[in-house]
Amino acid sequence: MECLYCFLGFLLLAARLPLDAAKRFQDVLSNERPSSYMREHNQLNGWSSDENDWNEKLYPVWKRGDSRWKNSWKGGRVRAVLTSDSPALVGSTITFAVNLVFPRCQKEDADGNIVYEKNCRSDSGPSPDPYVYNWTAWTEDNDWRDGTSQGHHNVFPDGKPFPHPWKRNFVYVFHTLGQYFQKLGRCSVSVSINTANVTLGPQVMEVTVYRRHGRTYVPITKVKDVYVVTDQIPIFVTMSQKNNRNSSDEIFLKDLPIIFNVLIHDPSHFLNESAIYYKWNFGDNTGLFVSNNSIMNHTYVLNGTFSFNLTVQATVPGLCPSPSPRPPKTTPSLFLAGGKPLELREIPVENCQINRYGYFMATITIVAGILQVNILQVTDVLTPGPQPDDSLVDFVLTCQGNIPTEICTIISDPTCHVTQDTVCNTVDEDLGDTCLLTVRRAFSSPGTYCMNLTLGDDASLALASTLVSIPSRDPAFLLRMTNGILVFVGFLTIFVTVIAILVSKKYRKYKAIESNTGIVVKDKGLNVFLSHAKTMFFPGNQEKDPLLKN
Image (cartoon, rainbow, N blue to C red; front, side, top):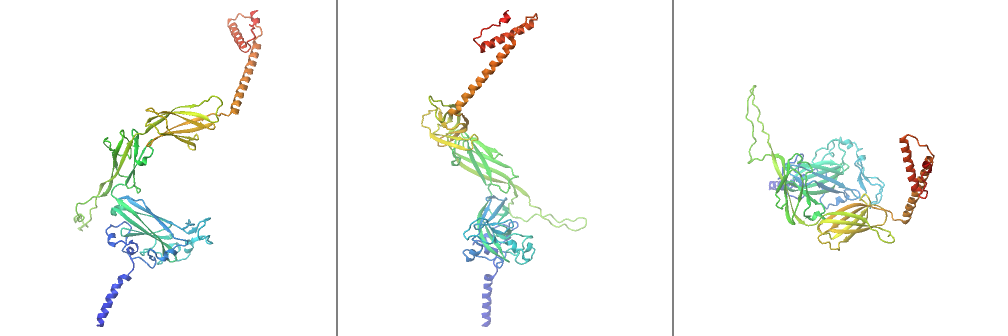
């Protein structure tokens, strides 16, 4: 009977062994998912199975809500932000980045220590110690210096030693698809994985962060995020059009080209060496357009609703698919000169070219709008009587397309960058079928201005610009200008008079007529010129050169 009791006790003890066994990574990081879910994925390069043991003594595990989380960091809680460049095309590389957000007034310095920011007021008040965690001082311990120690605490949770030399104070454990990756880092780290072996669809990436604490480690935060791996090329199309009031509502104008710009999400440049083709169908019975350009212009000539469809095709490298599982092909054994048989070897798997596709669809509405606006004439407005303080200018505008319902004028500096005044008014007058209207605007001071005039309706907004020069209308300035002109004319008159008198006196002296015909003609011409000059400036003097008459 005693033997039976001993046997039952042995069975009970054996039943308790799994409960007391060491934790595994999947127990710590599985996020309460069944382990069978994780086993369905292929091996990621450089990652390890989460069935490995976790060193809970060196890296304690705290459940959510554990009171110890409150004291895991001085001055508050640390928050982690996890981002990725998802979605990723299968076969490309996806990158995850983790950034730690410290409590207020804390930051990481150039040496990796956590310090208090200067001139920053926190809820706990100023601290006499500039350091939150001075890990540089901790390395003075020979057991930590330069990471050369082989101590049991310089290892990751699975027991693998830290890389040498290590000078990072945080341990990051990434976990996804039943596998984990360990990395030392500072307040931000990144990890990239190739998605060739990742199952298509949404997946979850989880990250647990530990900090150094003497010869052990303390968990400070956890974070997780969803990423997507797809076999379709992630694309997005932007559509823009001149005079379109709001492109985001997918309402565009008739008879104006729409610019379609295709953006391929490929942060790892997986498609850089691929031949990419774009197949455009604008839905207006204009046919199918195929090009290798990611930008296309198209003009709709009819109002209505149209279905726009785009297909992007890229040729990427990939493994050749096999119709059914089969053993690898090997070469037969052969003998050479020494009589020794050659070893069997596998024939390498051939690579194939695989076509990947991306799709984009949109419903586009086409309406009539204002196609163009022109400034025909700019004139100053002259009013009878005393001139007003402001200068009035009329702008004569013409437009094509719809009749506008509002007009706005924006007055800016000559560079058209600094706005000085904006005025908007509704167009009340009946323009009929002809878009011709006059806009009057007042300018309070002289100078050069940039004038923007916009005509708009519900769907469109057309713009025209011009530079306007406003002269000064200051009465004192005009008087000074007038006096200056009069003084200048007076001095010019006196100067010409004096020159004429001097020239007249010089040539009034009698000279005998010589037989040289050429000289006589020359002297006579000179006297005629002087006679005209004196007649112009001295109309009362009718003297006709009496000396020459004698």
